Image 1 (tube, one colour):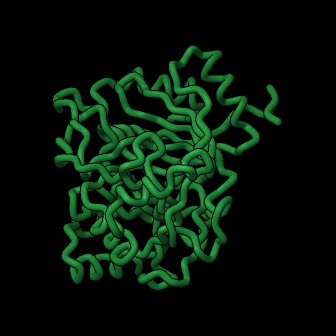
Image 2: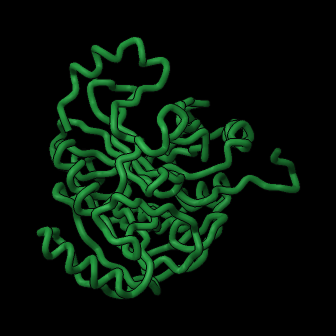
Length: 314
């Protein structure tokens, strides 16, 4: 139980949710090109006409999954008030030459590896212009290999991090990151401000770029909907109380069945989620068959036939 002597801490990222307008092609890119495991094939619980696809490590560990809402949306208009780039962790110098060769072979748009903020980084985009990067993971953050991955074990993606935000005004966002969410400002490199959570390495880093000249973004395919931060399930009620005590407008408790959530927007309009590390994706499926069939939370099961009829084939 959380007490005054054990302050609430974020354990890094939980997941990041983006938007695709082409679920079958999205599935191909993230499972074939990126070698991730589809650990949950579900629907948007607030709009059951669209898929919600979860790609992660071999066991769907918190901090490893990028998820997608399948919406028939126009391409994102890039700009500020947004999540501008999603990082993935890889290990070892040879990983970057492997991935550069792989992207060349697969026709993926990328820039050669270079040093960014003290880490080797390879920036790339998926087929819809989703801005992504691979970064050197110097931490010992655990992840689970996926034995059926299209990527060799030594070069598999370890999970998320860092995540880059673009805001027009740093001060108010910084106040939420530090005062509400308990992060610590680690350093500043040019116009990039780095904030750390209670874990080591890039899985625990939020990078914030202040740019007063950019126009606001418009969400669409290739854009990011929200980012979720990881907390222990035991701390969930205390985090809900913390947001109430600090008078942060928020969703209140939301049970997503595989995890519990709290949603709120930071002052520049970016949607944040606080999500628990359990029960986990194996709550309703055997670990060995995660993601193979449509998985619905119990409150949607009575509508399974109707929901399945409205979904396209992956």
